[in-house]
Image (cartoon, rainbow, N blue to C red; front, side, top):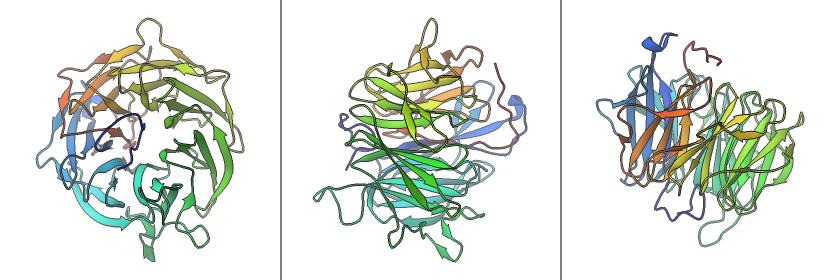
Length: 392
């Protein structure tokens, strides 16, 4: 299989971590969150579901968990903004599976769609919950034996959570006669700005970012390619859509870009140092901190964001926080932005860290790490209910 993150990691598979929310009230004491962790070692893959103690960040696996992922080697998942659906891509089957999320956090498979190319590696949903974006390692007619460029597939999301146009389920947004939009070699990550107007994908082998503008019908128009680093593998944007951050596994750095009004990117003056083999990045829902998971260092790097320039500065005092072995990605809980979870591929655990909104500092939550199904990995999240993210 192709790796969904850095080619420097000899992993057997890649999986995903997601977050969903059940029926809630605004106050933390009444909030019930659910964490979804996919795992790839079993065939079919698994999805473990945890209830989150919102006052302490502790995880409790729910009854009936884990669930089947609907295919082999699930590599990523994302939940709809309304908290009603979870989407999972199965790398080895070239499929995306839609699950309904019950108010008790349980999962119910609804729809399986075949993808036009092969080896999907990551996915994202826009804030409005109307489009799902999936990057695939290969376009149609290419494969491991005939390597070639990748693809970006766009699915409309119906009001009931199903994918494809209402009259033609599972049908992606067309690009002329194609069911995909062309990318470069080995795309590993995709990000859509909060306003939904622009989408970005990392081409790892080409060391570029592909930028697209989203039309009113979901059709993508290329803005261009932007060079970045040596071995880029993940990207994230801030909630205001002003800054884009990209990790580079070869140089142990994070690159920052200023997003222009037309969606083009201007690189910040210099990259920001990370720990060994950064492989995932996330911005907190307030837009004032950015965090990086470092696979080989078994830790998370923390930075504050300059709101004018986007420069990322390591937090004062301690800016490195230990987690389990081989954190492959991380998730910032978005309903209140108070917890971070990392999926630790090598130790088969999930680590929980409490986020201090006033300082950005992290501290281990009680009972962390939490046991996960074998080979847990990447991250995805949704916002649900009437929560207001508190400012420091």
